[in-house]
Image (cartoon, rainbow, N blue to C red; front, side, top):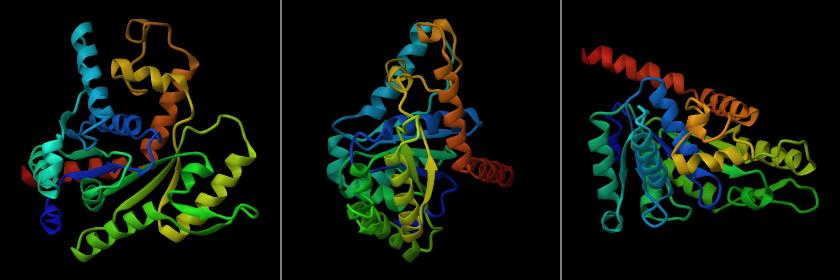
Length: 280
């Protein structure tokens, strides 16, 4: 199954973390919209058959566009059902294969717990984005930390899950997954905790082979976007937001653009355009 997947030109981007509340759906939505605005054909998949936050986000976006009569970039979206989940790997593999025929990129949002579909999504990931709240509570899913020295003393369960998925890809001859750990909901002021978490992540990045990227700050605007399905990359005006745009909106957009650049999405765009030229 994984060997067949390697023949697809589509790039699979998985947003995952076994711990809930890390902002996975917000990150997934912003990635999908960023790719759309770069001219790529984008599909999205929600694997959380219970919470469906990513699905609700996209539904809110479509509803807002319809109410306001506005043209807005929206991906083709699939939410796997409980019945799909019961079929396990076959349902996800078939969905990715079908979407891959007409899209350049697929963004997959995963639930905040372990399971067969989540593990398969990791093995499919060309790019894996792991949002992580900037605290030792969240760092625990990657590694253990000494309470006195704050040095890393070992790796944890989620890191083992990612390594297993990477092993599957290597065994099937696929390119290695580009794993990015995203420091999310960052404090906007320097703190001792922020510095110590950064040091711990730097140690773990060398041991586990991920890239650490500063992500989104703790901003109210990101929560406000959800009800209208908006992102920091959408055009802002008073009619759009229901209030006058603020400097926080501008800064949020800059943060997202920095994140997208760190993900090296230009490589995805170049590969897609090359594939289009070959097909022509």
